[in-house]
Amino acid sequence: MRLDPIAAPSPARTLGLPALALGATVLVAMGLALIAGADPLATLGLIARGAAGSKFALLETLNRATPLIFTGLAISVAFRARLWNIGAEAQLYAGALVTVVIGTQLGLPGPLALPLMALGAVLAGALVLLGPVLLKTRLGVDEVVTTLLLNFIMALFISYLLEGPLKDPMGMGWPKSPALPRDARLPRIVEGLRLHWGFGLALLSALAVWVMQTRTTLGYEIRATGLNAEAARFAGIPVGRVLVKTALISGGLAALAGFSEVAGLKGNLTADLSPGFGYTGIVVAMLALLHPLGVVVSALFVAGVFVGADSMSRAAGVPTYIADILLATALLFMVLAILLTKVRVVRG
Image (tube, rainbow, N blue to C red; front, side, top):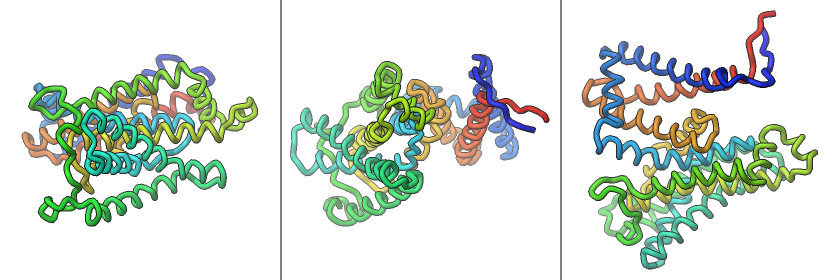
């Protein structure tokens, strides 16, 4: 058996195999529900209703998807240039930290504080990823290792700050930062519910990334660098500078997830602000085949699975861990589908 490359995959192959991967994921979910002693079809129905069966459920899904759109975009931009950014979690927390510092320490009015918090978050996330990319371009250090380790460094740094300089004196001993003033918070899209305008910012970011990748010189350079860095360098593309620009964009997008969670949802910084949004962003980006508009759809799907699984667990008594297995299975099937769109298995 050998793998032969396919020069020009057909549209049916390009679209059909990922669709088949999602179908196989649904079958696995039904099998897991059966093993757990529940009705497979009823379990899928409960997940769907829990994710979008009511106005409250739908808005909760959109709310959960907001940080995943930002981290999915961050990963898709970086991976498109073959810059393996595994540190979106660190960049998210950097953005959240700067958001809290600007919002609570400078005493600025809301109309001025919000844009400064967003800009500060973007710069913080960009700088967090700048170090690993410079180590990669100047010294050849593997960015997978450096970005992954930065996640743990940032987590420990945040814990130190929340137990020390940033600890809320009115927090009754809990390790959390002071809350943002009310006028320094993102307004709600629907009054009385949790969905905020961070979701609108996420949609605008996805559109901006799509325009950048398809309509600008930088987007062309990023794609060329990702396809073949040596050929891009031979053609005159400054690969090192392209990777630095890619890192700044990717880190800034991941940091906006931290900004939106603090300014739009939580109001303060805690050590458990993110339940793994940075890592889940990798799944989101891969399910979207690194397409920025596809990231929105993928993030909604992943968020729906998590929100629906919570509701399903309460109604059917099936463990919520089925959502984690479901997403891991979807990622494995999608990676296999992507591989088979580019190569065919030949006997001989």
